[in-house]
Image 1 (cartoon, rainbow, N blue to C red):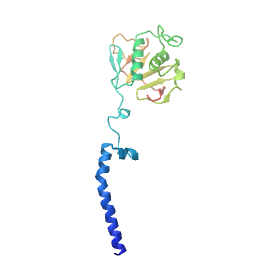
Image 2: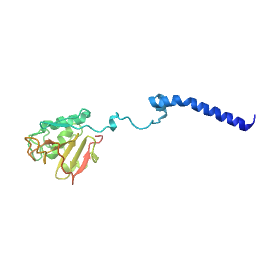
Image 3: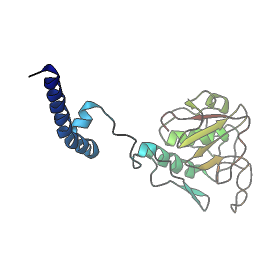
Length: 198
């Protein structure tokens, strides 16, 4: 037998063997079988149901209190529940710093109280200290906007603030203490920070 004929037969046999393996490997790849997982190969894209890549839900504001979204992690639920406890209290300069449970709260005391309730902060911080806390930029669930004179935060789409609140909510007087608001406010001149992982 000539070497060229032998090479052709060998090539045909290898091609036939490759085609015989195709359906099994395709089934394994589409069904997430062990062969595709063990090789470390990705089958392309991520599931739209993967919680890591879904947009965060939005909290609702009902009668001045926030209701956490159903997809919120426990830290978010706990922060919202903590903030709801102090919403309606008066503004008090230094409030929430010397005493965790205080008669009133200032801006950074309000942010600190919510984050402590979430288990994300152990000691209250002032607004300047928040400028270096956590990670840079906006977070998925929490964003603290801070500068040397003021701090407020967004939790699951709602603003927790002691000033410039949504005046459309009955009983809310601007600048009188911790309140929730749907309305946005300017973030010009503020540094955005977030708890790592959130």
